[in-house]
Image (tube, rainbow, N blue to C red; front, side):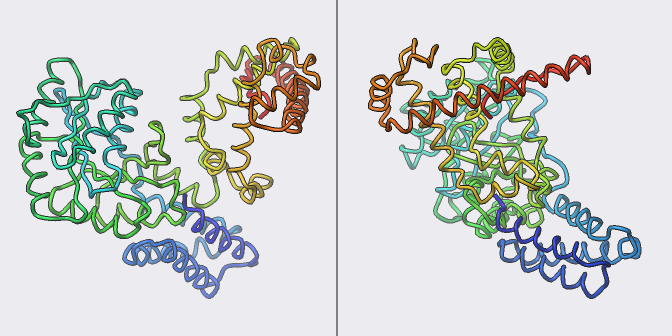
Amino acid sequence: MFDNLSDKLQRVFKNMRGEGKLSPANMEEALREIRVALLEADVHFKVVKQFIEDVKVKAMGEEVLTALSPSQQVIKIVRDELTKMLGTHQSRLRFANEPPTVILIVGLQGSGKTTSTAKLARFLTKEGNKPQLVSVDVYRPAARHQLSILAKQLNAPIYEGTAEETKPLELAKSARREAMQTGRDVVLVDTAGRQHIDEQLMQELSELKEALNPTEILFVADAMTGQDAVKSADEFHKRLGITGVILTKMDGDARGGAALSIRTITGQPLKFVGVGEKSDALEAFHPDRVASRILGMGDVLSLIDKVQQNIDFKTAEKMQEKLLGDDFTLEDFRDQIKQVKKLGSLSGLLDMMPQIGPLKELKNVKLDESEGDLNKIVCIIDSMTPKERRNHMIINGSRRRRIAKGSGTSVQDVNNLLKQYAQARKMMKSFTGQAGLLGKRMGKFKFPGLPGF
């Protein structure tokens, strides 16, 4: 996400730091490079023009040009303007005063409406809400079937409709009625899409809006389509009055032009981004955090949120006790790897960390191969007997051959795993011991630990 833009902007700031003093001349050069970087990232030209003008007014001020560290001042200005461009503050979902809250999910065909509806249902459930799903795409039975399958996977209720209900409005009203009767507080309405915007689609959506009085109308756009997504969002807003945007496939878009343009062009906030295919791959959009990530400052707050949501700290503390008692087994090693994998892709985690020192060098590492190695480790350990997982010392040559065959790997892979496990066990035991000693001195330190990582 934003990889190309991030690299180019960081290069601009690195060159600025090489200047002993900023002047109008080298500031103009930097702004020209920033402009090119934004345009190459597929940011809308009107947005780029306004952004450069705003940065120039603030960066060319006497306070910046005479500052002890002018380049850092400029970086701060660019960060502030990026945050403003993206929306300044997180835009949360609004809820009706009296439930159920109705949320219309709209967009063009193929943008990811149905999967986004299911992801949003999971997000709302984790937030303590009780969503009810319904698909009103009466033109494509496959779309309704897809949402039904996703709902069952999430264990979320879905209104399937009756044979007599053949119109979108009938389905939506019945779903809302069922939500009221069953105590569901949110109704997510997955609407039909088209290959392009047409009058019939807009008329249908307008009727749904008028009858259901939705609290939110969320437009789903494919980030990979760049400015086409922005243009479609703007058209939908003019015709329908959208209240926010869900941008899908952000994990596959290295440019990020749609995300950087959509707020300024439509005037409506980007509320969520899809960052993968799994049901939990939907993230609330935080403009300030994303601006920091673009400039290589990391996104530690989002990383903390992700850890708190996915890591079982009681289990982690038990692992710490096992390490201190020399009782950390291969089974524990595997379970900790699974906990780390809950946090998402390694490249995604790296994006959240400040790109300085060794972390910056990691960007060049093939992290997809590293993720494959983690999967291989889990397969190898799963192929062991419970006795072998509890006591790795009994794994002799014949056992290693059997484990390799059972996991579809080689004996060398098994040997490498056992070596890594021994090293991780030794390293983490030492590290946890030092952390515990520091905790006693501080009186309040607690180290949950992720052994081996």
